[in-house]
Image 1: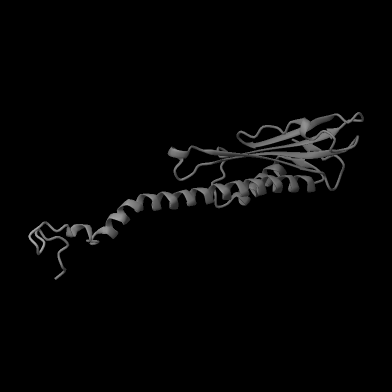
Image 2 (image 1 turned 45 degrees about the vertical axis):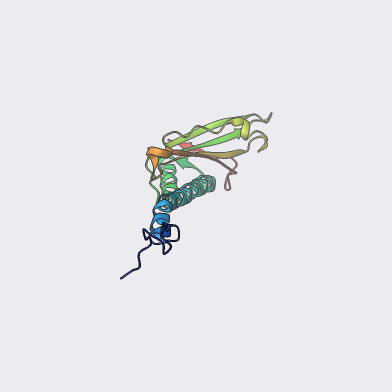
Length: 186
């Protein structure tokens, strides 16, 4: 039998406040007060990890698309669709549908006066805007080109009702490896 924490009368006849020295139940009260904070910290850590993972994968996917696009001697819609599939595999295990991910690949050619002009472009998914030509000015000589990639990924956290959707936008630029200008056929 456990001892009582309070007694109504002290030995001298006065009231004894034994409950001030009682610690029974204190751990349960502290746990009840700390549990919401601990759960919030755990959910915050999980959400932060997933957001960092999504951002890291978005950076890797943009660089992968630029690298694979720059390796080809020519492109078609089929080859660029295959590169978009490779970007989806980089994003695994995160969802990478056409609604959550967008890719825009462009070949930018430099004129004799150094002016950059988009020669062709290919889009997959939604929401990826072209890379502004001002970002590639000065990256090539006359007759050369670069491949620019604009990548967008919309990450929906577990608590998306509370946090909303996080959208990551990345840009990658690569120089063609096989030819000075990569042609595009349909």
